Amino acid sequence: MKKLSAVQIKQQALVLKVTDAIEEQGRNELSGMLQCWFDVEYHLFPGSLLMCFQFANEQALAAAEPNLLKWQKRLSGAMLKKGVILKDMRKHLVFTLKGPDD
Image 1 (cartoon, rainbow, N blue to C red):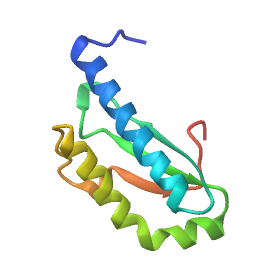
Image 2: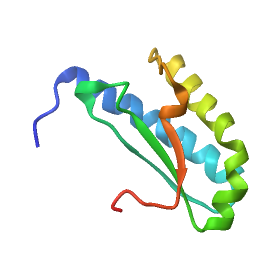
Image 3: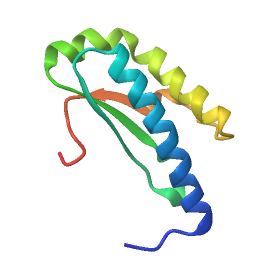
């Protein structure tokens, strides 16, 4: 794996901080949420950011789906507070049953 530059390390810290905050909110507000994980290619940041809320089962996922837009707005707002603009917030957060290793 290629070593991250100083700028990419700052981006990584920013993403981790936002992810931790969003995950904590999600666990408190969404029943059946297991974890929040993300994938990003720092050389294409912020366009490559994909945050996923993993749910325990199909029922929990179906119950959470109506709230997806609210969570996408929260992510976009949290990133904006850190100085990062997500051009299309719908592309950066999804609800899923898959884990980071799937």
